[in-house]
Image (cartoon, rainbow, N blue to C red; front, side, top):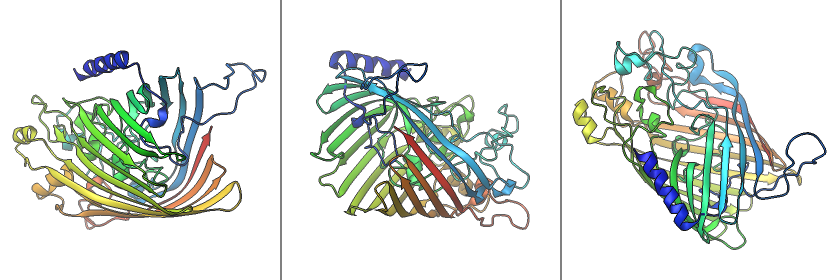
Length: 470
C-alpha cells in the first residue's frame, strides 16, 4: 500500500530534518479575496461571552471565506433547473505556527457538490454517468435520482465551487521548515498548478475556463518546496516544488467513473509526480510552469470496464501574468493534457492504446479602478479554446455513435464586472457564452426525435457575492 509508505517517508523526513516554515511558501501566492495564512484577525474581548479568547498569537488563527451566487445555466434547462441560487463554499480555516519550525493549516467546507453521481437518465437523452450504460443492465450500482441527472460531468453540474475535497476537508496539512526558505509539507493540500481560479479573476465554476477547473486539484501528498523572496514584494523571486501525491483527484474529467466510488479514495497503483516552478523577476511579470506525470484508476480484471480502467494523467502547463499598469493585468495560460487508457488496459479492453491529447489555452484581461479609499470597481474578460478530446469522445467516435467525431473544440467567452467593498467583500456579475460541439453527450440535448444531436444553448449568467472574515 502506498499510504503507509508515504506516511513513513514523511515521518522519517520530518524527524531527521526537523520541519518547515510558514504556510506562505506552500503553493500559490495568496490571490485577491483568498485565504492568507499570515493575515492577523481582530482579538476577542474575553469578557464578551463564553469560549476561548484567542491571544494575539501566531499559534492559532481563524478565517472565514464565503461565496454564493444566483444565476442561469442553460445546460440544466432540460429539467427546468436552469435558474438556481446556491452557496458555493463556506470555508472555515484554522492555521498557525506551533513554533519557529512547524506550521499547520486546516480548512473545512461543508459544501461539496463537484463530484458526478450515477444518473437514471431520461427517455431520449444520453447520460455518460448512467450505470446501465457504463457497466451493463446487470450492474448493482444504483442511480441517484435526486442529483445524478444534474451532476453529470464537467459540462453539466450545479456546483459553483471547482475544488474536489475529501468530504468536508478542503485542506489539512502540517509544514516543517528544513532550512531557511525550504519546507516539507504533508497532508491534504492544493497543488501548485498554474493560477488558482480565483487568483486569475474567475468568480465561480460557471465562468471559470476549463483549464483552470482541471488544474484546481486538491490531494493528499508530500511536497518539498523552496521559495526565494523578492525584496519588497509578496511574489517570490523564484520558487519551486516537487510533490508526490495520490493522484486520481481529477479522474472524472476523463470519464473514469470507477464504479462511482468516493472520489477521494485512491484507485491508482502508483504515486503521481508534480514538478512546479515560478519566477517573478520584476513586479510586472509572473511566470509559472508545471509538469505532472501519473495515472488514474486501475486495471480491474474481474470487472473489466472502459469506464473503470487505468488511464494516463500527464499534464504540462505554462502560465504568465503581465501587469502593464498598476490597475490592469493580462493572464495567459497554455495546457497540454495526456489522457486515455494505459496500454495494459487498452489491450484488456480491446481499444486503441494511442494516448488522447487535449490541448488548449485561455487568456484574461482585467482592469480596475479605486473609486474611494474603500470602494473599487473592475471588469475582466476571458477567452478559452481547448480540444474536446477525452475517453468518452474517443469511444463514441470509434463506435460511430451519436454523431461524435474527434478533432472538435470547446470555446468559451466570459465577461465580468465587480465592486469590491474594502478588502473583504466582492459583489460581481458574470456572463458566459459557451460553444460546446457535443452537448447531447452530457444529457443537455436529445439523441432521439426531431431535435436529435442538435446544438443547445449552454450559456450562463449570474451574480456572485464573496466575503472574507479576517
